[in-house]
Length: 240
Image 1: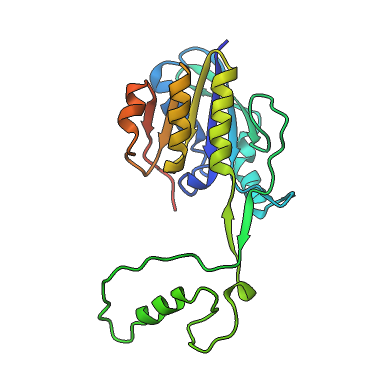
Image 2: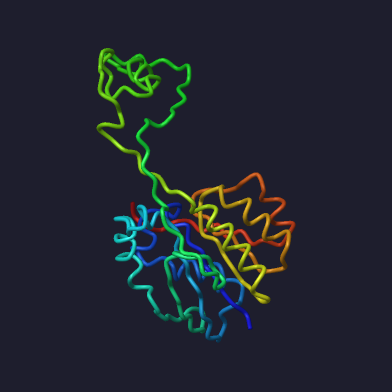
């Protein structure tokens, strides 16, 4: 029996896409436009990936996302004469029934981000670009004052996602290896998911799709298309 999976890279979707109920539109363009839904009842397994855990505790981002996704928990709607049932879950474990809980998906960094400045010059009166360049190079200094003895990490933290791209790639591989009649899409504008799709397309005859919104192309598109991967370019219709 055919199994459908939609893998959502939450932080690399257009802002507001979930809040403004655009997931049915993704499913329609991914499956409906290709005749999968005509006069049928299909169940779509939707998994959302993101920075859901600070350590082993639920993150604030997860709490906000729960509110956004709430309307898609075990819901159903009609598309193109068919009935679509959505089985939603946060990707807190590996796919395909593998018992491995994934936590620590948010990391805090005490150092300033590395920034590469060009050689351009700003001619605006009072511009502080040169001071900012010098501050950026001083990796530990908290502010722009030359004699500042306070460190950046004492006053601020940078939060960033960890493990998410690898988790999506691993799940994709587990699914194509364990589901004999698989139809799966990854919705993301992040080029980091491309190697996972390339690997999955090389070892499996599963029906694979990349859903994009803003990004128009990647270096691997020709290879992906040659392997039968469907690239769905879905223009965002959500507000900022």
